[in-house]
Structures are given as structure tokens and as C-alpha cells.
Image (tube, rainbow, N blue to C red; front, side, top):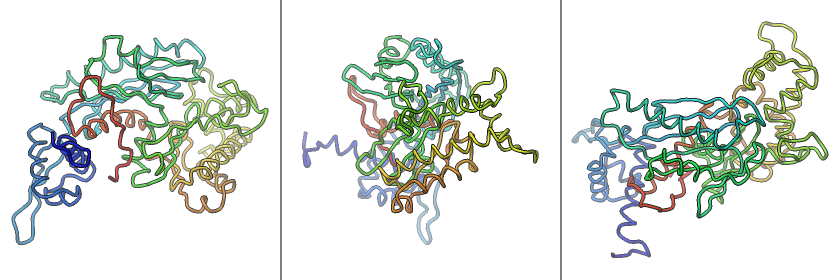
Length: 430
């Protein structure tokens, strides 16, 4: 096969298909003329690629655009119903599974509650069972929907998990020290169950990284070259995207030491940020200080009670214990964010995760003030700090984007058997 600068004609065609698909995905519907300019392709190349993608069912016509004094131009767009994507969020309180079409519109969802930390709920077999049951449930719901006739195939399953994710030649291993997972072969367990189609791509990544993926494509990180996306849930973690690490990197930010010989962290060390700033530690410190979360409440309900006590909405007096614990948590988080600002000098810091979003804008203002007070003046003067825009489903959205990005990288074609998955494209601005 002919080669051009080390690339074959097939490589060039795949790259052209990938570029056109991604431009249409983020900027469409578009005319072929506008698409050619945006993709850097000749009119002839764009016409050929669009015709090929339409023949594959990946692109469809989407009306016309009037042209002053000329012929109306036909618009084209990615066919949303051409494929299905599954995103899974293995959190520390529940396993959430969602099914999306190519436009990332939610088609079905289900949740399985994980009742307690340190219990058998974190047995990898239990969690794998929840994942497999959830995937089967959302796919079944899609098949049962009469409107889903002629729907697209399942393009992949993405899974966000707590801990360090190691990709090896034999599959993905998860090192989740805080949940008792030591080199857990999650990918192999799911594959060996026989409940996932063998040809369907499977992606396992750190949950903070999938949160970062979602915010970079669709949320507050879009258009940024350098960003830090923070996951604030039961624990805390972060994803860093820079020019040097364009595909994003999960960092175990929660296990940065903020107080020597401090509180014992879930990881076993003392003085970690997570021992002070994660929702689990925040609630534990409230109880130790005399606070009284509702009996039997889960973490989300208990955090709601703490917020109500610290900031009563009826004009009542704030509970000084709850207010002090919340203020101290903001200071710890601010100091931790200042370290990320000093180390990576991001344009933006986005705070997501269920606890971060629940604490909300008022809490963020305090965190922002402490961050700027602890960070060096130059990077602090350039960074914007805000809440994530995608809500509590951001991890599942980001997990589903993993197979979508790989699908685009292949030019919308199925992966060859046993081929390595392409690295996802993290930035929406191509």
C-alpha cells in the first residue's frame, strides 16, 4: 500500500474520517463547505469522506442553510442513533450505570447502592456483579423501547473506578487502597463472566480522570489548554490536563500530606488531605466535635444535614460546631488546591463530585479565598476556580466518552480483534 510520510493511504483515510466526525460532533450541523474549511480538507476530500460516512450510517442530512444569492447548502451531522455507549461510575456509595446515544443523550440508567465503607460491599465480585447487572438492565430497557427499532450497536463500555488504574498487556488492574482493592483484575473478571459481548471494547479508568474527560469535552474545561478537575466525593482526587499531558492524568491528590502526624487516613497513612476534606472525613469530624447526623442516614443525607445546621435557611442561628467544621474543611481544600495551582499552573480549576456540588457556590467562595491566599501570586492571578458544570452524572458521562473517543479515533470503524484501544482525545477544541 502506498505510503505518505510513513503513513499509508488507509491511515490518511482514517484520519480524515476521524477529523470530519469530530468536527461534525462538536460544531455540527455544518455544510460541506464549512466542514472542509474547519477540517482543513479540500472540497473533493470532504465530499468523498461525507459520502463514505453517510453510506456507513454515521452521518445524515440535517436540513438546508440559505445562501445569499446562491443555492441553499445542505447541512450534515453525526447520526445520534447510530450507536450506543455505556458509562459506569463505581463510586464509594453506589454503582451507577447509564446508557447514551452518540449525542450523549441519556437513554436509560440504573443504580446499585453500596451500603457501607469497609464492608463486603467492596468485594470485587459484588461490584463486578453490579456492573454486569447494570449493563444488562440498561441495554434491556433500550431493547424494550419501541422507539429503539433500528438502533445502533453497542460501541463500548467505559468504567470509572476509585484508585490507581494500571494498564498491562494482560488487562487492566485496579489498585484501590482505600477500598481494599490490591491489583484487582477488573477487566478480566468482567470479560471472563461471559456476560459482555467479546467484540465490545471495554475501558477502565480512574473516576477522577473520567470526570476530567467529561468536563474537558462538554463542561467547564472546554477550550482550556491546562486544567485541573477535582473529584470531591467520599474521598478526593484530581485529574490534570496540560500541554505535556494532553490525555489527562489522574493524581492521588487526596493522599498529599497536609498535616504531619495528623489524622489517620483510610489509606493507612496520617495527615492526608482526604483525612480532613473528603465527605466521609468531614462527617466523621462533625460527629467527633459533637454533631449529630440523622440516625441511619447515608453520606449524602448526612452532608445535607450538616449544611442545614451550618447555614439554616429559615433565618435561625447557625450551629457553631457545624459551621466551624465546614470552615476548616474549606481551608484544607484551599491549601490542597493551592498545591495543584503551584505545581501545574492551570488556567482553570473545576470542582465536581457529588459532595463538591452539594456544598455549592457559597462553600466554593471560601475555598477560592484560601486557595489564592496559599498559592504563589503569579499562577494564582491567572487561574479561574469554579464548580463543574455537568452535575452528579459527570463520571458516567466521562466513562461513556472513553469508547466514543476511541470510536472517533478509528474513523468510526469497528476495532480489529485484539487491537489496543486508541488513546482518547481529551480536548473538544481540535
